Image (cartoon, rainbow, N blue to C red; front, side, top):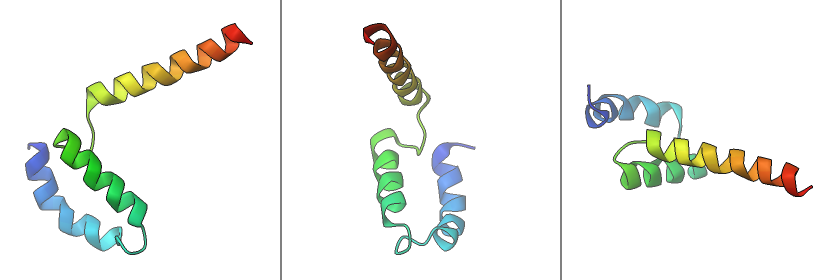
Length: 64
């Protein structure tokens, strides 16, 4: 199942569980991620983000 197919099937369920009025930030973030990556999750973006945070932590230790 493609990401697009999964979202088509599961979006109504998620909208019932995660009311955009109750969780406006989560709704905006999810929509922005979906538009930017064609999916709510992108392996390359996640890897780059994790690597950057790891290097930030190491830099703080080295500089400290």
